[in-house]
Image (tube, rainbow, N blue to C red):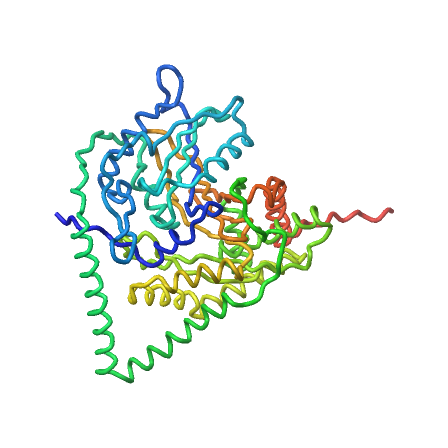
Length: 479
């Protein structure tokens, strides 16, 4: 058995470095289920059965029983088995005050999401929330971004939930923590890792010497893609009411659409589902600004669009495998259809630009050098220059129903962490015939977040009407 500690890659470490008390770097997801299948005899949520299930499934996910320690020489973070792992600490139980409406769930979820995870323990929590209206309960996942991105987060759902309501689960776990690594062993592993990186770097240099022309072509293409990535991040953007110094408290809101209605708009305009959703976000922001400031403010907001870089056959061993593109949301465009077409043209051009690949190359370069200088530079750059106004991420979820101990999953609402000076984040997930948007906001910057959610619902209807204008009624002429 391999008893070695596991180092984090550069992107994973970046999410640790970016974390401050004002910017906890965990992602979250709110899942709703019918309560009937998981009631105790007394009528409450059977949280112990959920704990037993999670503990059983964790045998195939060792990372969720590990915490972070730091190597002696470089203070580089590595994963180590957590002795005394306590499932009751990680799978928690709470309830809403009755009648358990939508606003109460949003308020509770916001309070849970704003609380940082304990770095001395495995970096995740799962909250069982009972007492929802419509005889439901919810699960709120909180997982540090150094452990998971959107795609691997969805893979986690497949690991914890079942494809059938009738699946029989054999509870029990034979897991035990591997022996604690001594300081001397950790030093030896660190020196070995440095040697391995040096050998890899030497191999690259040798390849350049053997095939200089091929290397020159590849280098030229790489420099072009890196230039596209850096250039996109350096493009100037408009300051907006969304961007100010963050506090430590959050609000959340949820918006839902029928997936088919979004797909119909996509087909009719030869755009992608993501383009349509970005247009809905832009239209929602436009309406929100008009109602709250009297105008659209002439804004074209700069948006960061995370991009999943995993190949089709990826085994999800990497926690994070994402790049990023930067686009302009034409919030100042009053015509919903023109707004969508502008977004469509931008995203098509960005996909061909090589910018996403350039970001990947920068991450790989950081890992090869074995230093954090690029990550730390990115942190200073982001905190001082704020290269974008908000993040909008779209996660493709399962198209088939999933079940938790017989209870069918009804919805998945994701939430992204906020970064310095970014008062709003938008996360989108599809599941079966639904699209759910999770809005995360600084509590003080956007006190009327529910108004923004309503504006996004209006924006989807306006876009639909712009694509298929209603037929005018013709009044017959009088005789």
